[in-house]
Amino acid sequence: MTGRQGRSQRPVTVSIVGSTGSIGTQALDVVNSEPDRFKVVALGAWRSVDLLVSQARQFRPDVVAIGDASAAPALAAALPPGTEVVTGIEGLVSIAPLGEVVVNAVVGFAGLPVTLAALEAGRRLALANKESLIAGAPVVQRARRTPGAEIIPVDSEHCALHQCLRAGRSPDEVARLVLTASGGPFRGRTRAELQGVTVEEALAHPTWRMGPKITVDSSTLMNKGLEVIEAHELFGVEYDRLAVIIHPQSVVHSMVEFTDGATVAQLSNPDMRLPIGYALAYPDRLQHPFGAIDWATLRRLDFEQPDRDVFVCLDLAEQAGRAGGLAPAWLNAGNEVAVAAFLEGRVGWGAIASVVADTVDACEQIPVADAGDVIEADRRARERAEQAVRRRGLAA
Image (cartoon, rainbow, N blue to C red; front, side):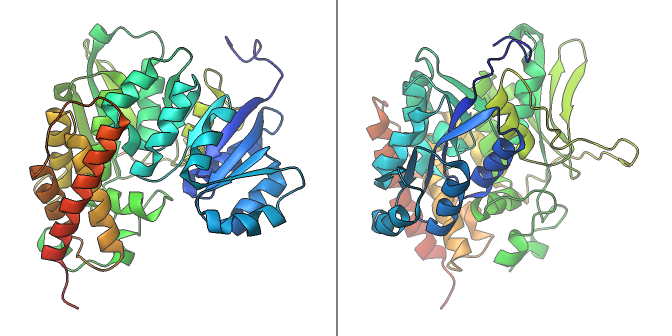
């Protein structure tokens, strides 16, 4: 495809793994906005049967996957006739290569097999699951070399960088990649003011609609730290040329600074359907203007440095990224355990960074031969993180 006029009139086939979550439902919004352009051939979720059935009745995929096999009978009974049902993690992985474009909207490390399956099948991967690239970088980068395989990032920041870099930029022209961060719900607060913050406060994101795990990550700035590692892996830019800046309006989604002093940025109102649509339509663009800005009402764009003394997860992530190897896998596992413990009320918000630090301190660097090595590192890191949670847990 070389442009919209040269685009085939045949719909692009799409698989969505994690279709009932925030990214998955918004991906279906995008498909629904241009129904002649995209055809959903597979949907998958872990256990949200009612929503999955509703999606399948509307979009009529060939295959539906349910991770929780016990829910399969109820799912199969409610689906349109002729729809195939597959189950378990194997089922979720099996539907990934069915589409020409694969949306990986699985939350957390569990998305790694989906990422690998899509890339190893030579598909375009619309990647919303940053953890699989971060934790599994050594094996994901090998799979990425499969003929036909490509990653188009769905994170708004990396989608912005992709757009700023796509016009044939020479790497020698790039001075820095600058990732913007909203600052989350706790921007401007001191350590003392963050003592005892609640789950509800952490989930009250000022600009984005996201799932609970990613929203908590935004409140600690771990999400931005993970995105720094992701930018390094996606674009091959060393860490000294990656920067983070707080931008509370979430209108400038990221920027590329060039060696001559010019800066190219991507701006839009905060709407995840824009980067999702970019990934689905690439190298073309949607005709539906998600996130369009009304320039007559946009009053200000503010920027400030992140407070790294308060939001220490940002530095923890960057240190793990620089260490490389399995360190990002240990970081990610520690964070997933810590965030889950916070959401369950087992640790306070301030303990998340401490649990992550304790976990990464125990990282064992070994050669990574295959995905099994990454999975084993994740298992060991989770054990260490659970120990840290128990040490730092709240009194009953």
